Amino acid sequence: MKVTVLTGAGISTDSGIPDFRGPQGVWTKDPAAQRRVTIGDYTADPEVRRQAWIDRREHAAWTAEPNAGHAALAELERAGLLRALVTQNIDGLHVRAGNSAAKVVELHGTIHHAVCLACELRTPMREVLDRVEAGESDPPCPRCGGIQKADTISFGQSLRPAVLQAALDAAHDCDLFVAIGTSLTVQPAAGLCGEALAAGATLLIMNAEPTPYDGQAHRVVSEPIGSALPALVKELVDAAG
Image (cartoon, rainbow, N blue to C red; front, side, top):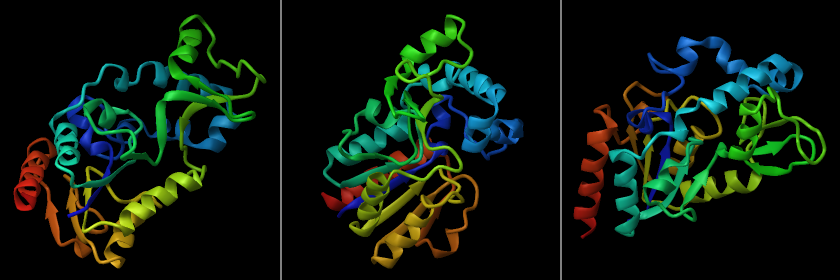
């Protein structure tokens, strides 16, 4: 059996990283925060960028540790069942939990690097945050002076074609597609469910809240990910064994 997994923010909440749209989500509690991840607002408004750099400096990813859900997906790979792990998350916790970088497709990029919007220079985020902590509220690119941001996909930006193609290939080439901790409302990530179904895969959705794809899923799991995902992985490994 080949399993492709799509993860969203819900898998990292047990690690202390809040989701976006849940009851305690970042955008639920602070709707203005969405401007800081919208490319038009970010490039046009220096104040939005200054606040975005504060957000990055204080991001929970710097202190978060992988949780039981992340560990379960690493076990799925060790069992030889994981086709690919497509993630909407930018926190890097899947690789830290033991999944190989070759299996992880970071649809929305990573917070661990910054990128210049003008010359595309890619810099370790720690180097840029050191400049923020030293007093630069909106540090420009060290090479060309352009605007820098996290090397993540903001609203209004397109996914990198090669990354999207890798995700589509994984959706088309699996027996089971599992969507975990994602609201399935953001395209094109959500559309991977439909792509997998069209290719003949079984669809399983694991999320605390209902999603638009629940009616098409073969199985919907609403129990907490930290316990439900290890149980699912054990079930899959036992069935394959």
